[in-house]
Amino acid sequence: MQKTFTIKLFIIATLCFLFGVGMMFINSLVYERSNYHQSVMEEIKTMHAGDQFMIAPFLLIGDAPVFAQSSSITGTSDVQDDKYRRGIYHAISHQSSLDISQKYQPITPPKTEDGATTPVSLIIPISDLRGASNAKITINGKEHPTKFNTQGKYHLSYIEATITDDARTLDEPLNIHTNLNVLGIDSLHIAPTGDNAQVSLAGNWSEPKFLGDALPNNKRIDATGFSADWQNDFLATANTQAIISASECKSECSPNLHNNLNHLAVAFVNTTDTYTLTDRAIKYALLFLVISFGTFFLFETMKKLRIHPLQYGLVASALLMFYVLLLSLAEHIAFYAAYGIAAGACALLIGFYTYYVLGGAKRSGAFTVLLSSLYAGFYFILSIDELNLLLGAVFCFLLLAAVMFITRKVDWYALELNPIKLSQTHQSEGDNHANS
Picture 1 (cartoon, rainbow, N blue to C red):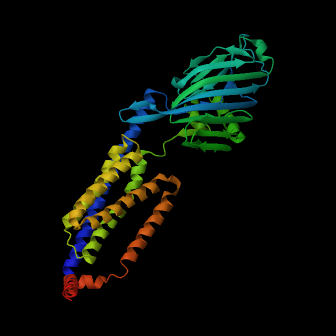
Picture 2: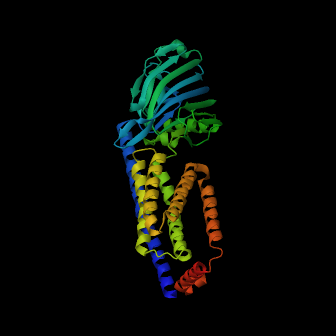
Picture 3: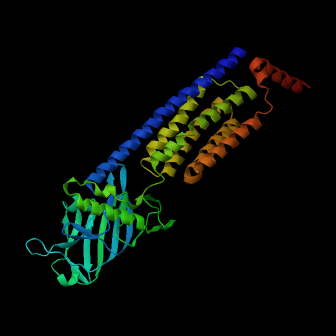
């Protein structure tokens, strides 16, 4: 009898190992689909405007940059997640309306060798000009025409407004007001320059992620959107010095000036990402199996049922199918709906099967309620992003405590040494009570 008991435990352990191997394959499928999703996003970015990097506007006097005494950049982003699609995948895009106010000291452009006035222009460097539109530059109340320059100074692409044709404008302090729209995907990065640079961004996206080289001084995030304010003179000064260095290095300049500057940035992310949540759910898969097998084993030992290893294996297969269903459904519908459908389908299937395995509706119903409660509990844990590790640890501790409480009076040695004799003893005692 001891040999039979040991063999049964060995078979259950083997099934758990095979279940783990199956989960490794499902985890690799999640990783593969996630990578494919990222590759599709990169393709969309190459066809449209991707992550946008903008440098605060500054003046060019010939090849020399001149920076503002003060700058105020205010942006409002209209964020959408259904504008750009490729099959079942969609990108998060933003249409950002930027309002920029700057002040400059009077400028006296030097003369060139032939006696002409050195050209002066205002430039707005943007990494991908395909997303720039409706640029309007007003200097001391006068609007100046703009043009795109894809091969400009310092290997930059920018919107440019020439202002040397109006010498009177340069003889007095310059108040420059700029409006433009910037379309991009995923994120918006702004590199401040000059003195007293302030950046304020707001949008209708409730899940922003603040990136770059400094966090906002003030921020607000709620269900309606976000707002954030930055003022970091150190970063603006460092960017100013980097651009001046680029203006002096001539042909050996780095063509990636945008990447060498300090940015204040916001990314529009989806914290309920299908693949991230599915990966988190997989981390609790073995616990589901252990609880299911443990419940079966307790029924075998305490209720004297005979459950074949193949029946253990079929229940494990149904638990595996939950994750395949979850991943495939979540790519098409909301994650909460996919989770509910997959969990409901697997719980009903296992409940139907255990009606015959456990020999009755009462036991099957109890097991189905237990499994459904586990699915509901783990969804609650997954839905709370910042506390999922803590809640998961507490939940697992409570489950372990429940198992230890239920099995506290089980004589495992008696079950191991002679489970059949113990079963016969319980049956004889029942017959004696019936005869009396």
